[in-house]
Image (cartoon, rainbow, N blue to C red; front, side):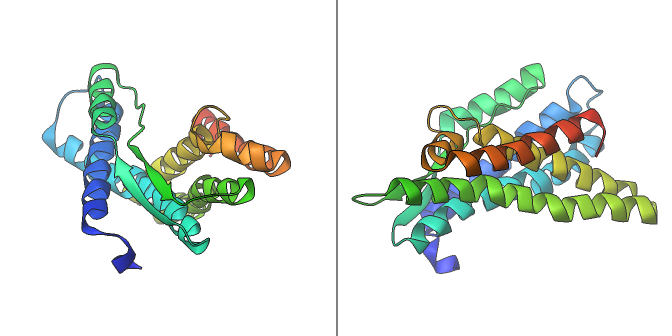
Length: 203
């Protein structure tokens, strides 16, 4: 699997991972006293939660496309990464479009495109399970840091899944809806339901 990720793609993934983690860190500490220790702690949390969520999402697209015989690789968008960090620093808001997994092929059917697009949000929904388990583990063992990582992980993965399922523009949701409206509705309902629950304090 590792050999299917060329060096330039690994570089793009690493830069985007670090930039996204920085953006989420700045958003989480926004408006608070700038304590280097706290910032470092939140950066590590962001690396584990937002960073992993991003990597898994893009690799799900990549390897699903490759399963159908296409070549695919993640290409970062440097300008949007700068915008993401700047918005987080100035307004405490994360609007992240770090790049996209580009698929190379002569013809990609609507079904294949739908399934490739579906792989990303579904991977984030699956990641919610171990992070939710961390919330339970942290609460039962009295480990606040484990519970916090779990809670942030659930929220971030729900946010990424829900955002990408919006049926607009180049987002995954538009391609999934075009392929199968029933599957789109079901996955979107789950993603937005979990997102609402996590933001409302039910999770």
